[in-house]
Each structure stands twice: as C-alpha cells, then as structure tokens.
Length: 200
Length: 283
Image 1 (cartoon, helix red, strand yellow):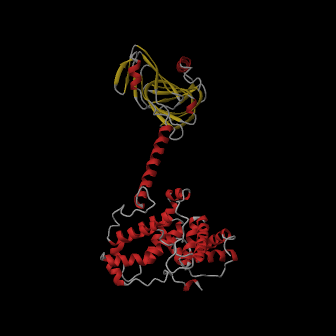
Image 2: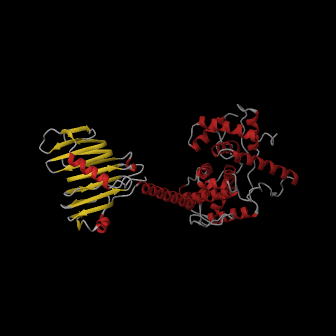
Image 3: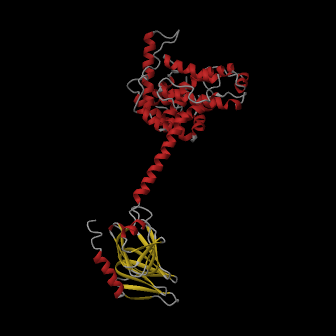
C-alpha cells in the first residue's frame, strides 16, 4: 500500500462522530460529552499507554487530554472529527512527559501493577490459554517498546500501532518526513533485534 | 490495528512491525483503572474537569494534577537555579577590606564619619569595599583585602577603596586616589585580577606588583618597585612601567615623564612591606 493512500484518520473502526454530537459538546450537554468520551477514550488511552509504557502515566495523560478537551470544547468545529487533534494532543503530552523529570523517576520506579497487561478476559474473548498467550506476547512487545528511546518509540507507535503515515507523523512531531523515515527504520531495527528470541 | 507497509523492510524490521501491529488496545481493567475511567468520564460529562484535583488516578498518593506538577517542577527548577546562581556569586566574592592598623594622632574619615586613628575598632566597623576614605594629617592606615591586596594610605590621602575582589569572574577592580599617597602590594589571590587606580591625571592598571600611587593636584606619580603595571592618561596609553621606574603625569598638559623611582615613595612601599610582611604568609 502506498503511503499516499494511507488515511491519517483513526483506524479503530469506530464510527464517525456526528456533527450534532459535537454541537452538543460545544453547548456542554452531558449526553454529547459522554458520547464523545466513549468515542475517544479507549483509543487515546491505548496510544498513551503504548507511548509511555505504563498505566499510571497513561492515566495522567488522559486527565490532561480531557482537561484540554473540556477547555476547548466551545471552539470545536462540529464538521471536523476532533480525534486527530486529540491524538496529537495525546502524543504531545507523551513527548512532554518523556522530557520531564517525572518520567526519569518513573523509569527507575516502575509501579507494581504494570505486569497485568491484557490479563483480564473480556466477555466473549478467546479461551483462557489463548488469551494468556496473547497477553504474554503483548507484554513482551510492550517491554521491548519500552526499551526504545522515547523518540524512537513514539514514531513506531504512531506508525504501526496508530497506522499513521510518515507525513502525518512528521507534521505531528514537527520534524521532516525524511527524519521520520530514518527514525522509524532505526527504531524498527532495534525493536526487531529486541524481539528476535521471542517473536517468530 | 495498523496498516502495514512491507516495502524497504528487512526481516528484523518486519518482525518488529508485525509485533507492534499485533498489539491490541489495553483494557482499562483491572478494577482500579476501570474506576479511573468511570470517574474521568463522570467529571468530563459534568463539566468538572477544569477544576483541578477532581480526577485522581488510583495510584496517586499525592494528587497533584499534571499541570500543577509541571508548574511545581518548573518553579522548583527556577528556585534551584536561582539558589545556585546566588551561591555561585556568593562564593565568587573574596573578602573586602580589613583594618590592619591605624596609627597617628590624626583622624580618619570613612564614608563621612570621622574617628581618631587610635579608635581602631570603630574604624574597622566602618570599613567596607568601595568606601570613601580620607586619612587626615597625622594619621596612617594599613588595610588588607585578605589574600588579595595590602594597602597603606599615608596621611593626606583621599581615596575610594576597591570593591570586593572576585575568585572566578568579574575580576576587574577600580579605585580612585584623589590626592595623597597609597602603596599597594598584591597578594596570592590577586593573580588573574586587574586593579585600575585612577587619579585626576591618569590611571594605572595593576596586574600584580608592588606599586605606589601619589597625587597632589598638580601631578600624579605611579611608581613601580617590582611586578607589572601599566599607565594611561588623557594623551593615551603610556605603556608598562619598568621596575624601579615611575611615570609622572602632569596636570598642566606637560608631556608625561618616565623617571627613576622616587626614593621617598620606594621607602614607603618597602616600609609597608616590612611592617605587614606576615599578612600574606602561610597562604
């Protein structure tokens, strides 16, 4: 698939947010706000978790992002899907977090609840053995991701987890397209080496 | 989850791409995280999110919101930088002037306060860097900037003392002798500093030496016993003073003259050296 044909929009299969919902958000209507929250939260949380590598930091990120959304709700354009903007806000917050002193502290004090990725079994999910195996693989990949330098990790997550093309990523990160490609290639190589023994 | 692109990737890179692409959205479980999600949604829907501290992630003990936490760290960083800067400036400064001796029957005026020369304690309490000192007839003052400078102000001297010397930066010092005679020897901590002493007729730049500066209204005399000093006047730079020589700069516009050191001034310098020879000892 060529890059030009790749959509910068979320690829989660969630339906578009109706303009009427966004008008309700502008007016501060509870129902509209709840709809928008449900449409956005899981994707944004996933992005934050993959970029930050732990749930505590991801929760902080969500709080910040939804505060920003709350403050900017009045100026939302009802005709435009706010999710790309929210994704950018989330990514920017994660980048700020990586640069912060708090992030450096977190790297040396991993919370005790960080080993439970995907261990809960959603209704109708795969059988326990398969679910456990998938969770373990997911944790291994996340651990490998966490070993990448934050700038490398973010470009891999945005590219292969979020499904964004290099142009969109370059715009989000404020760097050149060539720089994104170079960073992405370097990060993939490093990540592939980290996964060599655990991924087929 | 993600769209794949297989071109230009080697096996290792493709392995990584497959692995990341296989990641699923993390569940907002267990219960604690589901609780966070529910509370965040409730606050968002109710319009309470702008009010900070509403949503507290379950892992938090001290619920500072991210913005406040960043502000706290920023403030702490600025405060720390300010403290370090202040400490640096504080450590940079070396001690100011201290009284070694005040002798004679006359008085000394420091920043407008006159005291007999024999009231050494009162004079010492008034001495500070940059002070204006007048040594009246019949008195004499010996000062030191510990480790840096030794000075003798003869009777009849009116001068403004140098500021506090510096250890690392800002090592230029200035003083003025309006009238009178000042002998000056630099100490071990002076190395690398520059002291400029101005008179009505000229200015001497001292970089480490034993010098005497004399001014009487008609002329200024800059005597060098040893070391290095450079003299300038209104007509320009006169250059370095050779050892045991002096530059004499006149007030009437006469050409400055380079002469042998004035014996009287040399005697004063050597007397100061002899009297205060232990000031820099042990350093």
